[in-house]
Length: 448
Image (tube, rainbow, N blue to C red; front, side, top):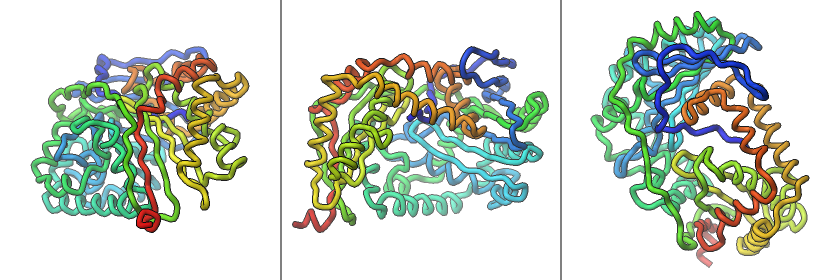
């Protein structure tokens, strides 16, 4: 499916001054864009459908910006940013928003951290005040005790979401199998228990001073707004936030596998699981869209090849999925599956190998590709019915391409793909002799 576009740290900031997007042929989202003197990129989008406003703030920092021995900081700040700031007391952030009927949340990836707020349009200024206060004054309220408290919260999250969740350890182990030690993607986004325990208060605050600055951020305000008044409010609340040192764009050498790399884990689960993973092209580069479509051809719906054959016809798989996990420094294509009771991982994998080999030899039928394209485009357009989704996508396109209104160009990537392009992509990017295979076995099965 079309994915939330991940941001690029290599993007140069747009020149200061407003830019009014001109309507284009095809899908287009109008916006106004300007840059504050402190470097904050701002995008405004007016949508009066409902009296709600969404603020969507991207910081160009994710787990890839950490370093070995000090991982987990980006995700830790996803928690610390809600603990109060210079003019907002501990616990008041959520209370103030809930008092006006608003809500908020955040997410962290390898490439960016995203903070978003939704409020009734008459409470926009509150949302802007809260975001600006934690951008400019968070460290005034952060103490070693608060850091220690949230560090324990993150450790508990790791236990609940990874260590004690069925199959959860897969996503802690997979990065180290795919990437060499020291690569920015070689550790999980949540970091490690050891690194979180070893980090000192100074380590944490230095990370914030380096990355959580206006010249390393982009703010979208979308919804029931007056762009002129909204610009004045943004300038009021963010102009006095001091910029930081320029952030050096993150880079990494290309990565390739030269063998089948296998590892087996045991877990308290009833059925085994296997994940097969390959390195694939980075987001928005040639081959990325093709691999998106390959994933949909394989498992995108009930008529897709693997789902139909494994789940419906042969009934040997409990579940199977394929996805292109697009990232800035290189993507990963993943197939994961669980066999039905009485059947084995190797039995299911044999069928998957057959279908991949078939795709290498023969392109999908034009009707099959068109059905896949129709489904992808429908999902994409449905997501854009929500202003909050448009806000996030405007930020994503701006950060990666420099053009917030990249919607039509993104769709055009997929529409230009032909059946033979998919076969070529499978041959090139999904070789049978260069990949990772990570298996999870039930503890009792392993003991036998």
